Image (cartoon, rainbow, N blue to C red; front, side):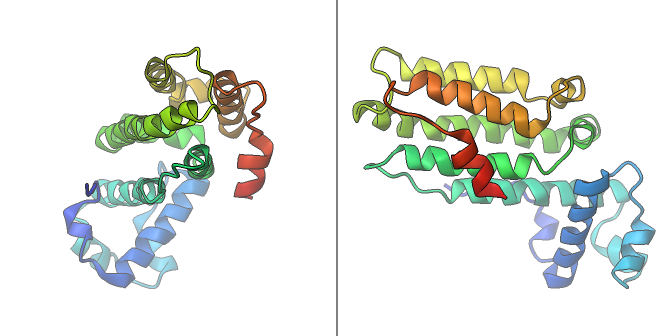
Length: 215
């Protein structure tokens, strides 16, 4: 099934505009977009504002397109992960690494600004979270059949519980008021969740499997 949240007008913008979007994305990840200057972006890349506005009619549309580009990169990475019937937890590890690496790249204030000022973009992020948890259901079920996951739990209910907790906890407002970083919160959440459902002889080492793998 093909997923596409990228705006249709970006499908044929060419390499030059893709470079503009990638550069702007890097600036947003560092400084957010509240004070983003289209004039400065154009000057940094030695292009005219007219060229930019030829593809993006407004500054808001430009920023929205950059944000969609950023999140689509994450979506593409995760959707490309193939299930492994012999080692079903491998897919879980790869998904965790991808989500951890990319979502930690954006600071809480910028995440909050995305949610408030670009709700359509944030809606796609929420839908993607549901998609990820749902796609992991088969991997967890297979892992349970192979004895990696505890037999005494209803894996479908556990996945539903994880989804609801992700929807509640992983909101920018939570991180803005927390003394813990996004990286530390995600790491702790994964540690508690994975080691809570795995058998006692299994161990999900978050530092080894996620943090070390994303540096």
